[in-house]
Image 1: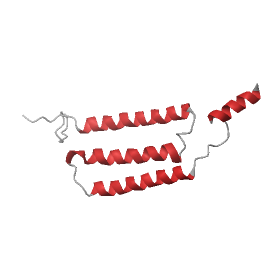
Image 2 (image 1 turned 90 degrees about the horizontal axis):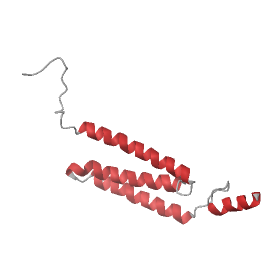
Image 3 (image 1 turned 135 degrees about the vertical axis):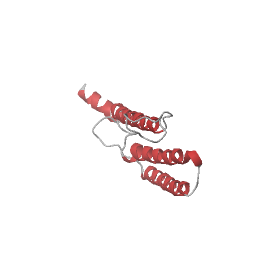
Amino acid sequence: MVSQARASEHEHGHGSAPHVVPIATYLLVFGALMLGTYGTVWAAGKDFGAFNTVVALGIAVTKATLVILFFMHVKYSPRLTQLWVVAAFAFLALLVLGIVNDYYSPSLDGHIRPAHLTRE
């Protein structure tokens, strides 16, 4: 029974044996990261108006996702590890959205005044 469990773990990639990724995969991911770096430099020289930050963050998140999935082997990790990575990104997204919401809040005009002083 123990040998069947070990064989099952080995078949599903959850055992202690490391997952071997073909070198071609690493080269393709490296090429995609280089294209992303070129895209970052290209986008820095362009004016996208209000979408400058969106374009920069889109490229950055894509590159970070490639690094996390392939170079950190999260793609080949157990489901629990993948769940923790997704939870960390969701928490980061909540923090960023909170900052963006605070920054673009319509009730603030950019001038912070002391609470006891009012303009009449």
